[in-house]
Amino acid sequence: MANNYGYSYNLGQAVGGDGVTGSVDHTNIQAMYSEIMGDLAVYFNNQVLLPNPNIIALNYPIASAAGNTVKIPVQDVYDPAELVPEARDIIPDYANDLNTTAVLLEVAKRGAGTFITSEAVEDGGTGVVTSQVVNQLAQALAQATDIAGFQTLLAGTEGALADSDAISDDIGKVGTATGTADYCLVMSPQAAAYASKRAPSVNMDADINADGWVTTGTTRNGFAVVRPEFIVAMESTAGSGADVTVEHIAEAVAILRSQNAPTGADGNYVGVLNPWQEFALNKELAATGNASTTNFIPNPSNIGNQVMLSASIGTLMGVTFYRSNNLPQGITVA
Image (cartoon, rainbow, N blue to C red; front, side, top):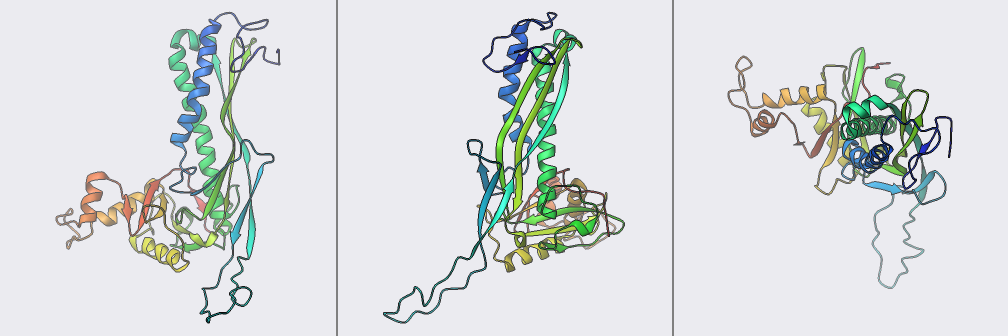
């Protein structure tokens, strides 16, 4: 079917027809399109941090469901069981009402596009061009997804953080910063939920005027905070990681444990740091056990040895850490 660009390429549809530029073998273009379709979702899934069951345990695939909103039941604080005398009815005398409320998770559409010239296909080959297109579209969709997710975890909703006051009052907070701040977090995998309405998909249309193809990638997904008390935000001075310390990690874990926040399957909470925050913690850990402040780590601790060998924190204080550049950074401290 003709459109504004010319001919629309859809999986399973024969390639060719009026209006399609003739400078490139259309069989190769169809093959390239099919490869992009098949590779995009896999590459996207490998790149996206948050739709990871180790980080967010509550995942809702709703592609086949009507509507764009998930209604998630949440149990309020409940009372412990009571001592029940013999032959007494538990209900109603000793009832423990679940007192459920609902959290609404609405998905949003995220999209990116690129233009492929006929010359690029002719000179670079379909394999090279396919790889570049998949990389560009998947990275764009993955980054948008993570940015939206971290903003939701920290502020309760998507949208750029105007200043530090936008951080939700319902979540725990540790650390301080001056001027501008970067944010990282420690959380329970049960703190939030993720829903996917549309897996990453591609549309590819011939542009006969520009002698090439317009390629767009889209996905529909979203996040919601289910239990804000299971999240602790840590604030550090932007671009340095200063003020994120082992003590802050320990404090965050204590806050979560005091809320009876569940851990993941590995028995740990989840932490996400940007590279400068990771650097600050690694620097502190590498010096652990070093009695001298002038010599270069003559006697590091076991944790310090791990940091020196892998340049990565890994697990610390009951927290499994991940690294991301998509956490809110450079936020004005109000």
